[in-house]
Length: 268
Image 1 (tube, rainbow, N blue to C red):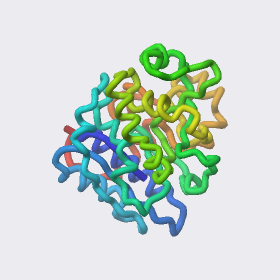
Image 2: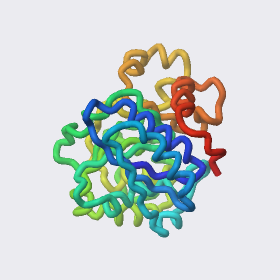
Image 3: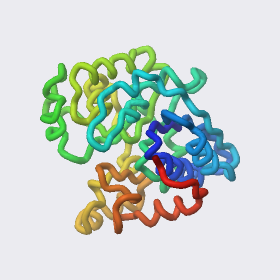
Image 4: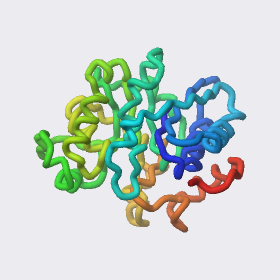
């Protein structure tokens, strides 16, 4: 499992690690591949403490390439978000399938089935973006060399199932970076992945990436109640997060896990 974040997201990233470690099926081993630029002392202590009491967990820190940090940031999303693009070249080649999670998620169910999800021979699995993809298209994808038709699926990149050998063969990293550098689209890595991979992404069940869209209002929580009960990953997409917004839905779940971590001061 991999995370890429900046130091301002150190605590949320540790919450993700803790939540996944706590929900692992018995006798399941997991390696956490961590990308975070800058000094590592506090990040290292937080992340390793998050899974120290769970057997079978290993933490490996990856060097963040300079070219990742040179890619354009957007609003509240830093350049560290591009780290997922580099994973095929940074993670040990013995790893064939990798799960990537954004640092503004929390795991609420067993993710072991991800290891055997059928991707139909495609190199990526992701959940279809629930918000209007044509809005994002107008924000940048229409400037790129991608024929975005009405039947084209657009995926959220907050949870990715990655087949690393296939992505290396396809030069996924190089193609996505070239797209970002050329088009500088609104949703950064997400737009690049959708444009470059297009018909090579397999939709996976929405329970693996239940975004803010589904629980933003009481009416939506009622409409999608069954989905929320079955959720494996909650994802606070957007600028409002459990750590900066009072009374956000399911924020108590996030804060409960945060309370199990050591107090090592504020994220900076």
